[in-house]
Length: 397
Image 1: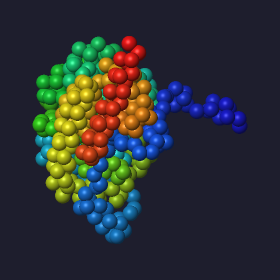
Image 2 (image 1 turned 90 degrees about the horizontal axis):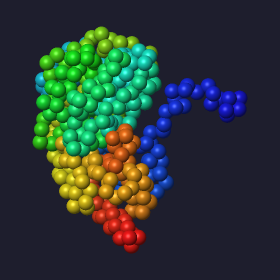
Image 3 (image 1 turned 45 degrees about the vertical axis):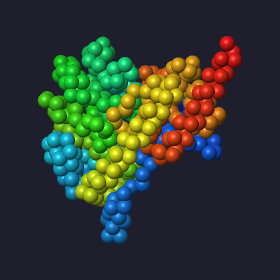
Image 4 (image 1 turned 120 degrees about the vertical axis):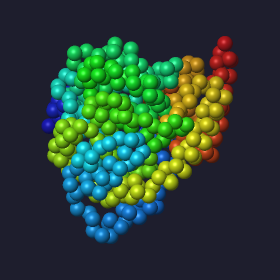
């Protein structure tokens, strides 16, 4: 078959889907030497030794076979205890499904609830895979903007304005990637009222729940009446520096978790066995590491926010995750122009805000899960970059 003939067999939903804005940008980074990256959204720590040892013990003991589709029973029991102790949530182990990262959990949740043409509200700026996953499941993503002047919190009026008779669910993600925003109790109560009034489901991606600064995370599930309407997603990647282990979980109403399990057993079968035993060790013995890591990120957070503001880039103070999301609108460049020029001229990698949705235009995402020395050097290079632009603009005038 000729190339054009082969292409005609590709599904329309895939052909119409744009390449990930992050992936497109990191293709440029790979071709450039000496780059300081504030782009990759993962901890710069290695997985704690106690967790790695648990994996090695599982390997030595020959625990390398498939597990139950829903996950190792001891791990689901430990997740149940974790959700209760850390967030006051009561989920029985049988209402918990262990997944291949939170990414699979998002996909399963959407495919379990979407009928063709259903609309899913997505607060944005947001993680890049949400809208494509909705489309791949046969749904229609409906983006709901969150704004810097509202501290990137989703507002009731913006949700209501986009609800139709086809609206099925709301996909929430707080603490937020890329903004670092959190929702406080009054914000969640307003959203919960909308959810009740319009009979919606909620998918709440809380993978950054352990990474908050100055305010303990409250789960959306904790609001009255929301547990039976919410699919809670969380995982080990960010909290325990386990990105490559691909381990997450979902908790929710029995009917929905059962539906997700059906899809999971025909696609992934089970999460990686050794990762599950590593996750068990993380929940039992890993929280001293989490506390240490969060304290260090808090220090870096203050350095980068202060530095960006001193350079004249307005920056909302992130209170969760490990991202700063400064405005670069005053430079006259688009987000992509800013990032590409910064990369080529000063070899600093950050991510254009429009990769996270239309509301992200005019911003860049800077990940401060990088060493303090790299953050400080990146700020110095950014200062040179901005000064050179200012001098050039003055010369033109």
